[in-house]
Image (cartoon, rainbow, N blue to C red; front, side, top):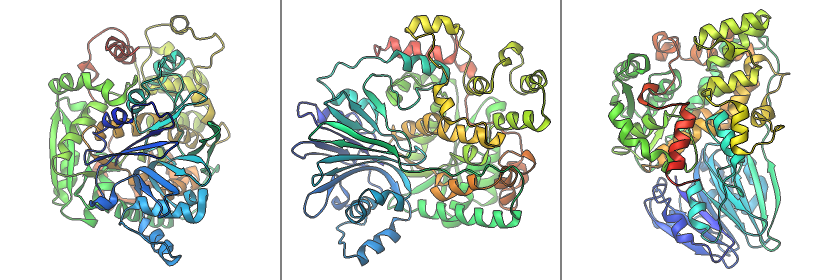
Length: 565
């Protein structure tokens, strides 16, 4: 994993921009002026630790160059194909495979690769810069554009430090969005003229005209709209396990030590088990809490003991929370209110003492349907319940103090179930931030909430397109990269995602059981005690916070007090 940065303004401070992301790449920095553009790179050495693996990388004629943050899965097969076509390689990296694939197929190379990535290609022949972000949004890619000046970076801080001639202005609609979502939804960021490239998107910037000439999706996820069972369950399980086994095996490849995060939940247990099959000496890393209702450590240890794995564990407590609290704004550069970032940082720091790469179970809830809100929507439609009965159901399942809170539509319910309810009224918030009366607070959700999909699939897809990249993957990327640890997510391989969404809802979630087909597949290997226990989720005790208002408001206030406003 690495940090990438670049721009077309010769007066910008590329050295300061890339150095502030040295945590993403502590193994070397290189800045390469290209005449009309500049590339900068901070390297975390994972594959081919020699100087040949350093970036930017260029074609033999120096007409095409690339900076790349991420990993490509199964790239060895593509390399063999390119070698048969006559391409020569100077390294064993996946980066050089991408470079030569682009030389061979142009933009269409993106359809031949799978992985996690933010990558930028400089094509001097066409006079363009091409940006690509992976399909699920595992890796970040930010860009600045004001109509003339264009730049990109792996993190927002890179742009803030690089664009030293620019006076960045706060986007107050983004701050208002944060209070509704607990994160700032893409493509927005905290600043005007600074954006996040959407997952599964490509962008083309014309260097001469200084215009963005394309920003479009290169991948469409086809979704099965049927609810009833269509396939034999044993066949589904066999195919699913083959896909997971292959994905884990491909993502275990590295020239540095690899471990796993093991929370004790369904997804991380499955990934850890498959990693153990590939390497019986695998190290796993777990975090516990003193509060019983948050602690899953006993289940992590149970799996580790079953397969005699070394489980490195540590307890997250209030003292660690206080120690880490002020670092949150440095990790995320903009308001972000998923407090599980703190224990994620702790377990990442612990893992980095022994390994450079970890495999995680992230994505399982979105790909296979694991959140209680998925079940709540399914229950409503299954019983064809009137609203008051549905409200009683979710009221009993989630919060027990604010019944009026649930007299709302589905999108409002989903949004509030993810985050907090602001103590300020919507009217007051709009006035505070200058938000127009007709501004749609749930514009991001509305883009991906399709009533024609089956109920659980509908919310799964919404989470896959919003909560997963904007919250879960953002949280893990910044917290792990803060200690120079690469995290890989086998359950988000392209083939697994496409396979799961190709199943009917009943086949994926038999009898409405959350992650039903995934659990069925691994009953023997993981055990029912782990797979079918009550879902706890990975979070931290909210009573660690002390203050008035919602967590979003407290964290926003602290962010502003730091002077970033």
